[in-house]
Length: 221
Ligand code: ADP
Image 1 (cartoon, helix red, strand yellow):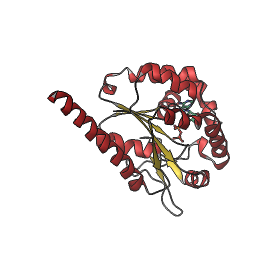
Image 2: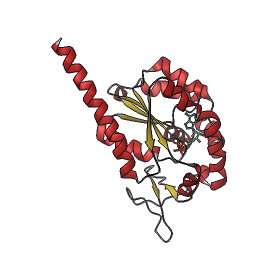
Image 3: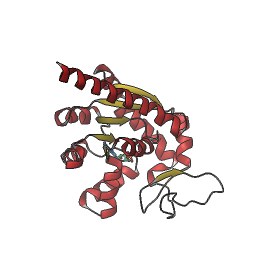
Image 4: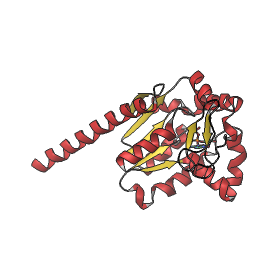
């Protein structure tokens, strides 16, 4: 299956993406992770992207589109993929249409106030990239590899308010775009991690079962 995970920043896209790729074996394509890897490697693209990302703005469409196009052409994407953080603009969605036919768009819906609260406790592991939340009094160590967690520069409450504005202006129109094309699957993202993934798995299992039935019918004919 070829899927898109849509939703505001810190809606839990990365967390759900890990659970989905683990269960269904599709490739995880996170444009945020790809850009952060470029920054860490000190490439020209990384240098260009760093200040844009830290300020909470969007990296130019042509750069992102070229990066995703190249990634989707890799072998591990043949069996399906999950786009996380892309498309973020109508121009990116239109470019994607020329690259691949998407089966469904999972739209994780979370209200702004909850996002600001979540971001205050969101930490990322600089060693393995794992994201988790920390609560007061807890040691800030990665649950996966034990390294000391850090807060992303674009995760402060002020930057997050700006990123939410950018989301509303540039990304929110995609909900209509995909709804008009009959691809939108609304997911309530305000619930606990397992409850959010249960909604996603229900949809995915149903879609896989109905595709299998279609295959069976066409074999019979
Ligand atoms: P989050 O997980 O908080 O939603 P991401 O890790 O996906 O954020 O992205 C971090 C930043 O990387 C974005 O705020 C933006 O600056 C840049 N970025 C990621 N994906 C895209 C994209 N598709 N188009 C433009 N910029 C992007």
